[in-house]
Image (cartoon, rainbow, N blue to C red; front, top):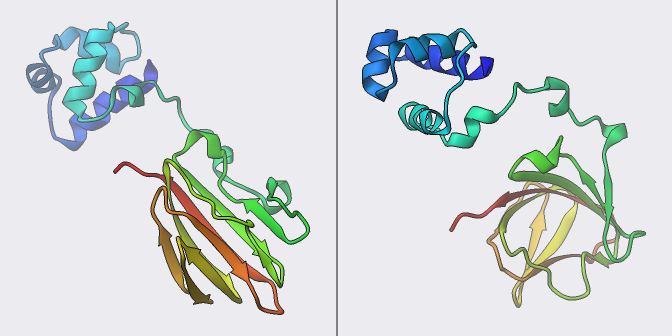
Amino acid sequence: MRKLGLTISNYRKKNQLTIREFSKQSGISTSLISQLERGIGNPSLQVLEIIAKTLGVPLFTLFIDDIDYSSLISKKENREKIYRQDNEHIVYDLLTPDFMKTNVEVLQMEIKPQSKTTESHYQHDNKEEIAVVVKGKINVQLEDEIFLLEEGDVVRIPKNMRHRFINESKSSAEVLFILTLSFY
């Protein structure tokens, strides 16, 4: 619970509050706040809920351990490759470090000449997608309409929208994808 104490202390300092003022604001005794800040208190779930509400953060954030900074790095040689139906023509590099612990995934796709991501359309039930053409030209099919995208162009693909990418050119194309959970 050392992190909890640091969180409370940092919040108090940022808001220029004494322990007594934080106690008054939260309804938690000054002695318990002092113990928590020193890492020796043992708060109940009810107290943790009150602290989270006072700090204006979701309860689960009080349980997140300190970050292992090396887990935030994704080295090119260690990246996972993701293959779609035709792994000779389409390869995705998973760029997001430790992607299972975040609500954002970043992928880079290389699509070979005369290839498409899927024979039919693809859609995400719970993710919104942003795609940036990094190299070359590529067509994006959104539902039944096709649009030509060139280097630097961006497309937003809302959740549940049927889509696919088609490379009709004689050169490879690269597309950077950012997928995030959609909350609407």
